[in-house]
Amino acid sequence: MPLQQSLSTLLPFVPIMRGGDSQEMIQQAVHMLRADEQLRNIEALLAFFASFVLEFETIQRIMRWDMIILEESPWYQEILRRGRQQGEQMGGSKASNGHCYVSWRGALAVCRMR
Image (tube, rainbow, N blue to C red; front, side, top):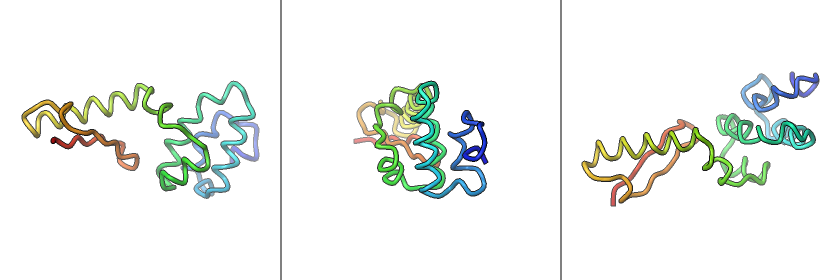
């Protein structure tokens, strides 16, 4: 278990490891990431993996995490681009005329047309 060893680069993967899917374990991983200046930038990755085992609101509460971090990531932008593209194909008009939503659980962007 990475919380018991000095394998701090594995901390973002705690939620998907055996025994790491509890709120307490994820909180401990967040504290350990924040304690190391070099690892603070991978907190978003921990949030991503935590989304497979906890509700989004719980993750936000644990991490006091701002969506801006995610929205600036290349992964989010690619998911959004694909969702818009899919919306254009399905709706026959520009997806920018609608709203796009990102599903954490399925990592899928869905665009609704107005």
